[in-house]
Length: 340
Image 1 (tube, one colour):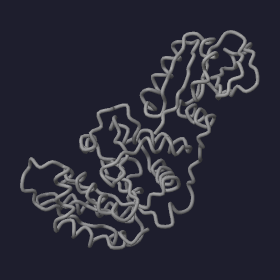
Image 2 (cartoon, rainbow, N blue to C red; image 1 turned 60 degrees about the horizontal axis):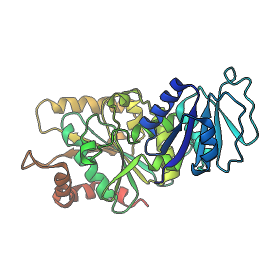
Image 3 (cartoon, rainbow, N blue to C red; image 1 turned 180 degrees about the horizontal axis):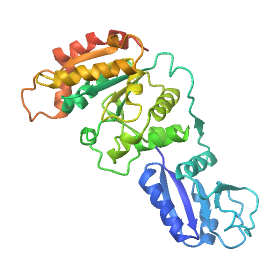
Image 4 (cartoon, rainbow, N blue to C red; image 1 turned 90 degrees about the horizontal axis):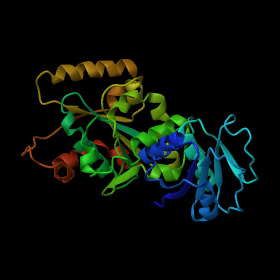
Protein backbone atom coordinates (compact mmCIF):
# COMPACT_ATOMS: atom_id res chain seq x y z
CA UNK A 1 0.00 0.00 0.00
CA UNK A 2 1.27 3.47 -0.94
CA UNK A 3 2.49 5.45 2.06
CA UNK A 4 1.36 9.02 2.63
CA UNK A 5 4.17 11.54 1.94
CA UNK A 6 3.98 14.05 4.78
CA UNK A 7 6.01 17.28 4.99
CA UNK A 8 6.56 18.46 8.59
CA UNK A 9 7.69 21.61 10.38
CA UNK A 10 7.77 22.01 14.17
CA UNK A 11 8.75 25.22 15.93
CA UNK A 12 8.67 23.30 19.21
CA UNK A 13 11.45 20.72 18.76
CA UNK A 14 10.53 18.72 21.86
CA UNK A 15 6.93 18.32 20.70
CA UNK A 16 8.12 17.57 17.17
CA UNK A 17 10.44 14.81 18.37
CA UNK A 18 7.65 13.20 20.41
CA UNK A 19 5.13 13.47 17.60
CA UNK A 20 7.39 12.11 14.85
CA UNK A 21 8.65 9.39 17.20
CA UNK A 22 5.08 8.25 17.78
CA UNK A 23 4.36 8.23 14.05
CA UNK A 24 7.47 6.17 13.39
CA UNK A 25 6.67 3.71 16.17
CA UNK A 26 3.00 3.16 15.39
CA UNK A 27 2.31 4.37 11.84
CA UNK A 28 5.57 3.63 10.03
CA UNK A 29 3.82 1.55 7.37
CA UNK A 30 1.33 4.35 6.69
CA UNK A 31 3.52 7.49 6.46
CA UNK A 32 6.70 8.66 4.78
CA UNK A 33 7.97 11.60 6.87
CA UNK A 34 10.01 14.58 5.58
CA UNK A 35 10.92 17.02 8.37
CA UNK A 36 12.04 20.61 7.61
CA UNK A 37 13.89 23.02 9.87
CA UNK A 38 12.83 25.99 7.71
CA UNK A 39 9.09 26.59 7.34
CA UNK A 40 9.55 28.77 4.26
CA UNK A 41 11.33 25.99 2.38
CA UNK A 42 8.52 23.56 3.15
CA UNK A 43 5.90 26.05 1.99
CA UNK A 44 7.81 26.69 -1.24
CA UNK A 45 8.24 23.03 -2.19
CA UNK A 46 5.38 21.38 -0.34
CA UNK A 47 3.37 20.40 -3.43
CA UNK A 48 5.46 17.23 -3.78
CA UNK A 49 3.81 15.90 -0.61
CA UNK A 50 0.33 14.46 -0.02
CA UNK A 51 -0.07 16.92 2.88
CA UNK A 52 2.02 19.40 4.88
CA UNK A 53 1.76 19.76 8.64
CA UNK A 54 2.93 22.69 10.76
CA UNK A 55 3.17 23.47 14.45
CA UNK A 56 4.68 26.33 16.43
CA UNK A 57 5.21 28.70 13.46
CA UNK A 58 6.04 32.25 14.57
CA UNK A 59 5.36 34.45 11.53
CA UNK A 60 2.39 35.27 9.31
CA UNK A 61 1.23 31.98 7.79
CA UNK A 62 0.67 31.98 4.03
CA UNK A 63 0.04 28.73 2.16
CA UNK A 64 1.52 30.05 -1.16
CA UNK A 65 -1.52 28.70 -3.03
CA UNK A 66 -0.91 25.11 -2.00
CA UNK A 67 -2.81 22.42 -3.92
CA UNK A 68 -2.25 19.84 -1.15
CA UNK A 69 -3.90 19.94 2.30
CA UNK A 70 -2.18 22.22 4.83
CA UNK A 71 -2.73 21.17 8.45
CA UNK A 72 -1.78 23.33 11.41
CA UNK A 73 -1.50 21.77 14.88
CA UNK A 74 -3.04 24.59 16.84
CA UNK A 75 -2.79 25.59 20.49
CA UNK A 76 -5.04 28.48 21.59
CA UNK A 77 -2.47 30.01 23.96
CA UNK A 78 0.69 29.46 21.93
CA UNK A 79 -0.88 30.59 18.64
CA UNK A 80 -3.11 33.39 19.91
CA UNK A 81 -1.47 35.97 17.60
CA UNK A 82 -0.93 33.70 14.61
CA UNK A 83 -2.40 35.08 11.38
CA UNK A 84 -3.76 32.32 9.15
CA UNK A 85 -5.09 32.64 5.63
CA UNK A 86 -7.91 30.52 4.28
CA UNK A 87 -7.54 26.88 3.32
CA UNK A 88 -5.64 25.84 6.45
CA UNK A 89 -7.11 23.03 8.52
CA UNK A 90 -6.76 23.63 12.26
CA UNK A 91 -6.29 20.56 14.43
CA UNK A 92 -5.98 20.50 18.22
CA UNK A 93 -2.30 19.99 19.03
CA UNK A 94 -2.75 18.27 22.38
CA UNK A 95 -4.86 15.20 21.73
CA UNK A 96 -4.26 11.53 21.01
CA UNK A 97 -1.97 11.04 18.03
CA UNK A 98 -4.34 8.53 16.41
CA UNK A 99 -6.99 11.28 16.23
CA UNK A 100 -4.51 13.60 14.52
CA UNK A 101 -3.71 10.76 12.10
CA UNK A 102 -7.42 10.37 11.38
CA UNK A 103 -7.62 14.08 10.54
CA UNK A 104 -4.58 13.84 8.22
CA UNK A 105 -6.09 10.90 6.37
CA UNK A 106 -9.44 12.68 6.15
CA UNK A 107 -7.80 15.77 4.63
CA UNK A 108 -6.03 13.76 1.92
CA UNK A 109 -9.27 12.04 0.97
CA UNK A 110 -9.13 8.73 2.84
CA UNK A 111 -12.55 8.18 4.36
CA UNK A 112 -12.70 7.91 8.14
CA UNK A 113 -15.59 5.78 9.35
CA UNK A 114 -17.25 5.18 12.69
CA UNK A 115 -17.57 1.70 14.16
CA UNK A 116 -21.13 0.38 14.18
CA UNK A 117 -21.60 -1.18 17.60
CA UNK A 118 -25.18 -2.35 17.32
CA UNK A 119 -26.77 -5.15 15.37
CA UNK A 120 -25.27 -8.34 13.99
CA UNK A 121 -21.68 -8.49 12.87
CA UNK A 122 -22.60 -9.71 9.41
CA UNK A 123 -25.43 -11.73 7.99
CA UNK A 124 -23.17 -14.81 8.10
CA UNK A 125 -20.24 -13.64 10.26
CA UNK A 126 -19.09 -15.79 13.15
CA UNK A 127 -16.37 -15.85 15.79
CA UNK A 128 -14.45 -18.99 16.68
CA UNK A 129 -12.10 -19.33 19.67
CA UNK A 130 -9.17 -21.70 20.26
CA UNK A 131 -8.07 -22.22 23.87
CA UNK A 132 -6.00 -24.61 25.97
CA UNK A 133 -5.30 -25.05 29.65
CA UNK A 134 -2.49 -27.56 29.16
CA UNK A 135 -1.55 -28.15 25.51
CA UNK A 136 -1.06 -24.46 24.70
CA UNK A 137 2.10 -24.95 22.63
CA UNK A 138 -0.15 -26.55 20.01
CA UNK A 139 -2.74 -23.76 20.09
CA UNK A 140 -1.15 -21.73 17.32
CA UNK A 141 -0.58 -24.66 14.90
CA UNK A 142 -4.18 -25.77 15.42
CA UNK A 143 -5.54 -22.22 14.99
CA UNK A 144 -3.54 -21.80 11.76
CA UNK A 145 -4.72 -25.22 10.51
CA UNK A 146 -8.34 -24.33 11.27
CA UNK A 147 -7.97 -20.95 9.54
CA UNK A 148 -6.30 -22.53 6.53
CA UNK A 149 -9.09 -25.09 6.09
CA UNK A 150 -11.80 -22.45 6.39
CA UNK A 151 -9.95 -20.10 4.02
CA UNK A 152 -10.51 -22.58 1.20
CA UNK A 153 -14.13 -21.42 0.95
CA UNK A 154 -14.49 -18.10 2.78
CA UNK A 155 -12.77 -14.94 4.03
CA UNK A 156 -11.08 -15.70 7.34
CA UNK A 157 -8.95 -13.57 9.66
CA UNK A 158 -6.83 -15.03 12.45
CA UNK A 159 -6.34 -12.81 15.51
CA UNK A 160 -3.57 -13.91 17.87
CA UNK A 161 -4.37 -13.07 21.51
CA UNK A 162 -1.90 -15.57 23.00
CA UNK A 163 1.29 -14.24 24.57
CA UNK A 164 4.46 -15.30 22.75
CA UNK A 165 2.56 -17.82 20.63
CA UNK A 166 5.31 -17.98 18.01
CA UNK A 167 3.27 -16.26 15.31
CA UNK A 168 5.88 -13.54 14.76
CA UNK A 169 8.40 -16.28 13.92
CA UNK A 170 5.94 -18.03 11.64
CA UNK A 171 5.20 -14.77 9.77
CA UNK A 172 8.87 -13.72 9.83
CA UNK A 173 8.01 -10.31 11.30
CA UNK A 174 11.44 -8.70 11.49
CA UNK A 175 10.03 -5.17 11.50
CA UNK A 176 8.95 -4.59 15.12
CA UNK A 177 7.51 -1.17 14.16
CA UNK A 178 5.00 -2.72 11.77
CA UNK A 179 1.36 -1.84 12.45
CA UNK A 180 -0.65 -4.79 13.75
CA UNK A 181 -2.94 -5.75 16.62
CA UNK A 182 -1.95 -2.66 18.64
CA UNK A 183 -3.15 -0.44 15.82
CA UNK A 184 -6.40 -2.41 15.46
CA UNK A 185 -7.04 -2.04 19.20
CA UNK A 186 -6.30 1.68 18.97
CA UNK A 187 -8.85 2.17 16.19
CA UNK A 188 -11.45 0.09 18.02
CA UNK A 189 -11.01 2.07 21.25
CA UNK A 190 -11.30 5.38 19.41
CA UNK A 191 -14.38 4.18 17.52
CA UNK A 192 -12.99 5.41 14.17
CA UNK A 193 -11.04 3.65 11.45
CA UNK A 194 -9.98 3.78 7.83
CA UNK A 195 -9.63 0.87 5.46
CA UNK A 196 -6.06 1.82 4.58
CA UNK A 197 -4.93 1.66 8.20
CA UNK A 198 -6.68 -1.68 8.67
CA UNK A 199 -5.09 -3.22 5.56
CA UNK A 200 -1.62 -2.24 6.81
CA UNK A 201 -2.23 -4.30 9.99
CA UNK A 202 -2.92 -7.57 8.14
CA UNK A 203 -0.46 -10.03 6.64
CA UNK A 204 -0.87 -13.42 4.99
CA UNK A 205 0.01 -17.06 5.52
CA UNK A 206 -0.69 -18.49 2.05
CA UNK A 207 -4.49 -18.03 1.60
CA UNK A 208 -5.11 -17.05 5.23
CA UNK A 209 -5.25 -13.45 6.43
CA UNK A 210 -3.54 -12.90 9.78
CA UNK A 211 -3.29 -9.73 11.85
CA UNK A 212 0.33 -8.98 12.69
CA UNK A 213 0.89 -9.88 16.38
CA UNK A 214 1.48 -7.35 19.15
CA UNK A 215 5.05 -6.39 19.99
CA UNK A 216 4.27 -5.70 23.65
CA UNK A 217 2.21 -8.66 24.88
CA UNK A 218 1.46 -6.92 28.19
CA UNK A 219 -1.21 -4.88 26.41
CA UNK A 220 -3.27 -8.01 25.72
CA UNK A 221 -4.47 -8.29 29.32
CA UNK A 222 -5.57 -4.63 29.29
CA UNK A 223 -7.96 -4.89 26.34
CA UNK A 224 -11.55 -5.30 27.51
CA UNK A 225 -14.50 -7.07 25.93
CA UNK A 226 -16.08 -3.80 24.79
CA UNK A 227 -13.01 -3.03 22.65
CA UNK A 228 -13.07 -6.52 21.15
CA UNK A 229 -16.73 -6.13 20.18
CA UNK A 230 -15.94 -2.85 18.40
CA UNK A 231 -13.00 -4.53 16.68
CA UNK A 232 -15.17 -7.40 15.42
CA UNK A 233 -17.78 -5.00 14.04
CA UNK A 234 -15.04 -2.96 12.39
CA UNK A 235 -13.49 -5.98 10.66
CA UNK A 236 -16.79 -7.43 9.49
CA UNK A 237 -18.15 -4.01 8.47
CA UNK A 238 -15.23 -2.90 6.31
CA UNK A 239 -13.19 -5.99 5.45
CA UNK A 240 -16.09 -8.39 4.86
CA UNK A 241 -14.65 -11.28 6.88
CA UNK A 242 -17.14 -14.08 7.41
CA UNK A 243 -15.09 -15.79 10.14
CA UNK A 244 -12.80 -14.42 12.85
CA UNK A 245 -10.63 -16.96 14.65
CA UNK A 246 -9.31 -15.98 18.09
CA UNK A 247 -6.21 -17.73 19.38
CA UNK A 248 -6.91 -17.05 23.06
CA UNK A 249 -4.32 -16.23 25.72
CA UNK A 250 -4.44 -15.32 29.41
CA UNK A 251 -7.58 -14.12 31.16
CA UNK A 252 -8.56 -10.45 31.00
CA UNK A 253 -11.57 -8.44 32.14
CA UNK A 254 -14.48 -9.76 30.05
CA UNK A 255 -12.68 -12.98 29.02
CA UNK A 256 -15.70 -15.22 29.54
CA UNK A 257 -18.07 -12.63 28.09
CA UNK A 258 -15.95 -12.70 24.93
CA UNK A 259 -16.06 -16.50 24.82
CA UNK A 260 -19.79 -16.31 25.42
CA UNK A 261 -20.22 -14.54 22.09
CA UNK A 262 -18.27 -17.18 20.13
CA UNK A 263 -20.18 -19.61 17.95
CA UNK A 264 -17.56 -22.32 18.53
CA UNK A 265 -14.92 -22.83 21.24
CA UNK A 266 -12.17 -25.33 20.42
CA UNK A 267 -10.71 -26.62 23.70
CA UNK A 268 -7.36 -28.35 23.38
CA UNK A 269 -7.50 -31.49 25.55
CA UNK A 270 -4.56 -32.67 27.65
CA UNK A 271 -3.26 -36.21 27.31
CA UNK A 272 -3.95 -37.15 30.92
CA UNK A 273 -2.75 -36.20 34.38
CA UNK A 274 -4.22 -33.26 36.25
CA UNK A 275 -5.21 -31.43 33.08
CA UNK A 276 -8.65 -33.05 33.19
CA UNK A 277 -9.33 -31.34 36.55
CA UNK A 278 -8.47 -27.96 35.08
CA UNK A 279 -10.70 -28.60 32.07
CA UNK A 280 -13.62 -29.56 34.32
CA UNK A 281 -13.25 -26.34 36.34
CA UNK A 282 -12.99 -24.32 33.12
CA UNK A 283 -16.20 -25.84 31.75
CA UNK A 284 -18.02 -25.06 35.01
CA UNK A 285 -16.79 -21.45 35.01
CA UNK A 286 -17.73 -21.04 31.36
CA UNK A 287 -21.25 -22.30 32.15
CA UNK A 288 -21.66 -19.61 34.82
CA UNK A 289 -20.82 -16.88 32.32
CA UNK A 290 -22.65 -18.15 29.25
CA UNK A 291 -26.38 -18.45 28.74
CA UNK A 292 -28.05 -21.24 26.86
CA UNK A 293 -26.83 -24.70 25.96
CA UNK A 294 -23.14 -23.79 25.66
CA UNK A 295 -22.06 -27.48 25.55
CA UNK A 296 -23.22 -27.64 21.93
CA UNK A 297 -20.62 -25.01 21.00
CA UNK A 298 -17.66 -26.55 22.86
CA UNK A 299 -15.44 -28.70 20.66
CA UNK A 300 -12.89 -30.94 22.38
CA UNK A 301 -9.68 -31.28 20.38
CA UNK A 302 -7.27 -34.12 21.07
CA UNK A 303 -3.97 -33.33 19.38
CA UNK A 304 -2.38 -36.39 17.75
CA UNK A 305 1.04 -37.47 18.91
CA UNK A 306 3.81 -35.61 17.10
CA UNK A 307 6.48 -37.96 15.78
CA UNK A 308 9.36 -35.52 16.15
CA UNK A 309 9.70 -32.65 18.64
CA UNK A 310 11.86 -30.80 16.10
CA UNK A 311 9.11 -30.48 13.48
CA UNK A 312 8.51 -26.89 12.33
CA UNK A 313 5.18 -25.15 12.79
CA UNK A 314 4.73 -24.81 9.02
CA UNK A 315 5.34 -28.52 8.48
CA UNK A 316 3.07 -29.47 11.37
CA UNK A 317 0.23 -27.36 9.95
CA UNK A 318 0.70 -28.91 6.52
CA UNK A 319 0.64 -32.43 8.01
CA UNK A 320 -2.45 -31.77 10.08
CA UNK A 321 -4.28 -30.11 7.22
CA UNK A 322 -4.00 -33.09 4.89
CA UNK A 323 -3.93 -36.11 7.23
CA UNK A 324 -6.74 -37.74 9.21
CA UNK A 325 -6.62 -34.98 11.81
CA UNK A 326 -7.47 -32.40 9.14
CA UNK A 327 -10.33 -34.59 7.95
CA UNK A 328 -11.68 -34.74 11.51
CA UNK A 329 -11.57 -30.92 11.70
CA UNK A 330 -13.54 -30.67 8.45
CA UNK A 331 -16.16 -33.10 9.79
CA UNK A 332 -16.38 -31.11 13.00
CA UNK A 333 -17.30 -27.85 11.28
CA UNK A 334 -19.79 -28.65 8.48
CA UNK A 335 -22.05 -25.74 9.45
CA UNK A 336 -19.05 -23.36 9.32
CA UNK A 337 -18.01 -24.49 5.85
CA UNK A 338 -21.47 -23.73 4.49
CA UNK A 339 -21.22 -20.05 5.42
CA UNK A 340 -20.74 -17.68 2.51
